[in-house]
Amino acid sequence: MRSSRQKNIVNYLMFGLTGLCTLMTAGILFFILGYLAYHGARSLNLEFFTRLPAPVGETGGGMANAIVGSAKVLFLATLIGIPIGFLGGVYLSEYGGQTFSFVIRYVTDLLNGVPSIVIGIVVYALVVHPMGHFSAIAGGVALGIMMIPISVRSTEEYLHAVPVSLREAALALGAPKWKAIVTVVIPAAIRGIVSGTMLDLARVAGETAPLLFTALSNQFWSPGWSKPTATLPVMIFTYAISPYEDWHRQAWAAGFVLLVLVLSINIIARLALARGAYVPRA
Amino acid sequence: MATPQQQQILREPVIAPPEGAEVQKSHAEPKLHTKDLDFFYGNFQALHDISIRIAENKITAFIGPSGCGKSTFLRTMNRMNEALRNTRVQGEVLLDSQDLLSMDVNDVRRRVGMVFQKSNPFPKTIFENVAYGLRVNGIHRRAVIEDAVTKSLNRAALWNEVKDKLHKPASALSGGQQQRLCIARALAVNPEVLLLDEPCSALDPIATSKIEELLFEIKDTTTIVIVTHNMQQAARVADYTGFFLLGRLIEFDNTKTIFQNPSKKETEDYVTGRFG
Image 1 (cartoon, rainbow over the protein chains, first blue to last red):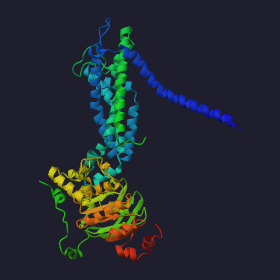
Image 2 (image 1 turned 90 degrees about the horizontal axis):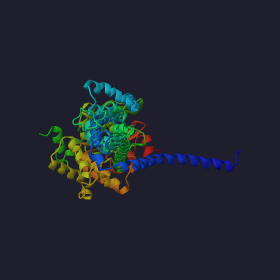
Image 3 (image 1 turned 120 degrees about the vertical axis):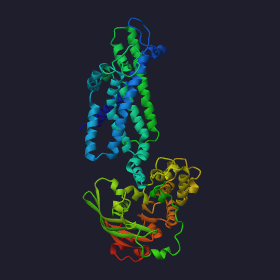
Image 4 (image 1 turned 90 degrees about the vertical axis):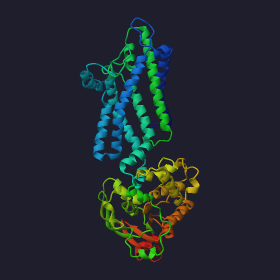
């Protein structure tokens, strides 16, 4: 028999160890936030948001083109990924047969696990190569594909959380199934679906690998959709591995801006969700 | 032009039946008529050989222990069970002597309205809840909808309590009010039959008595079928009562007969509280 004293020690040890790891989880986020704020915020100024990158050798300049470029690529990605993901989710939740839905759900989860760089290569072969050059379109397609699986699953789950009784109420009034879905089920879930979409967007906003060989980058403005386009993540990559002190400073600033952007989207999405939506049981 | 369905929705509900109607109806066809109805959930047979004639503009109640099939039977009469996977129905259901199972399902559900056990208002305003049935049936004229909403809320005895907050969310109402709102919502499309699946099981006695009163008000124009766990409720409101046990309709008769002089032993045991 072990003494109660020994048992107590093990108990405290477990408590301490698990607690410490929990603290670390939260701590890592705050550390990253603080570290980026320390390096990035210092380097941040108005020029960063309004000026083009300075030519090599000169100091100063900004990343206005990358901010606009990121917005353009994300816009395209949303345009491609969300309609497909949303309607696919509606199908899975409302129409799909059991076996078929299971297969699709499984495949969707696999697609979600495909490394982002692989999606980049495929889009390179299917879009960049035929077009003959890198473009915002190619970047949008790559990120759009990455958005689909999460969009499908979150749409499906939020629709699923809408009580059956609401569907029955609509059907019992003579509403055809599609009308019940459009006028009752989707409106009841829309808050969750929108915040799921925002989280999805926030997730791909920081993707770098698939953009490296789709949108590439650009030191200048890229009017239209078919030119190589600068984005924040790729700029961070390019600037961080450069040998110039001033570029490192700018990379920190870009990292800080990207992080604030992504965190804001996250927080807004979660706030929206907190206000009385039907939330799927975890 | 309004479609025939829409015209039917918009017809004035007859407030009192014409004189002598009772006599004429005594030999009339029943409003709802099932013949040898079987129902299956997968391999499980939930209903056996149900044959019943439900009289027009009367209140018919079904009683019986949990799981006896009374709700399942109710849901075959507006084909709500079709929304469930892996179910099968055999036999005949006639609505005004016409085969209900081969009609357009949305048409059936508009003519045979339903109120559920747990009140289920849409997460919309009180007004939009009642207007919903009209809108999905293609009626969009504002004046027509407003008129129908007012009438339905009046018939459901809810108007005075909500007239100043029609555009507030339905969730702000009490449980009893929400259930009456669901009744108003069902009445708005002028159903010929109203099915109620244990509508008062979650309500207190005062809210319950309000709903029972309104059933008496609307029974002049609507055939009412109510499933209830509460035998006193059946005795209070119903003209006819059916007793279900293990998926079979054991006995169906005048309410008075069922409660005072049942012909089957099982019915007597149940209504006297010996089991169930």
